[in-house]
Length: 201
Image 1: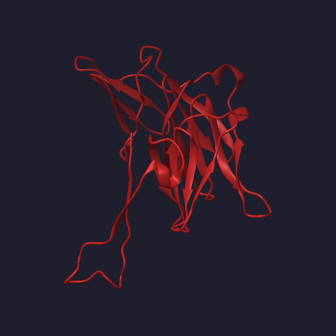
Image 2: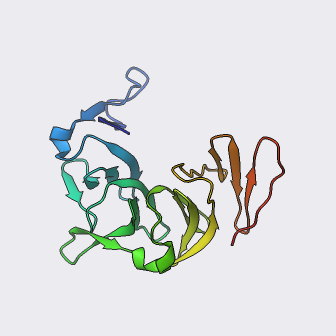
């Protein structure tokens, strides 16, 4: 959780051998008018910043702040930029993306319908991890792959309730004493005293 947003911007005019430290500015809840708790951050190709906040998605263009709520209104725990330039949003029992209308205003578009109905009770999306084949969706119990406006179930871990699945750049994740390794065809689990095992369903 991030209670204060601290942004460092590289200013070519003020940075150099005599002044190598970029300017830093802190933003407080009074500045962006939302919850003090922030969970995630991502930047798009236009250098606009997006934050996952308990009050929704915060957008900062370098001058002003904007807040977009999910529908229904949820705490946003994870964000990611997909290969089409959309900001993907992972929240409590909700998954979607940011789109812009004809006036250029940001709106939230739910993609929950892409999940099979029996898989929609995933509780919380803790992480969205872009990879070459799409975006991996990590929930409390399962891992999914979002690709080309479709969602494919990869693996469910029934013994990880109330734990968080996190993927790193190397596609490894740890839960307590267990380590999971993900590939495009298999998800393996390795405990301290067992071999790697388990294929994706």
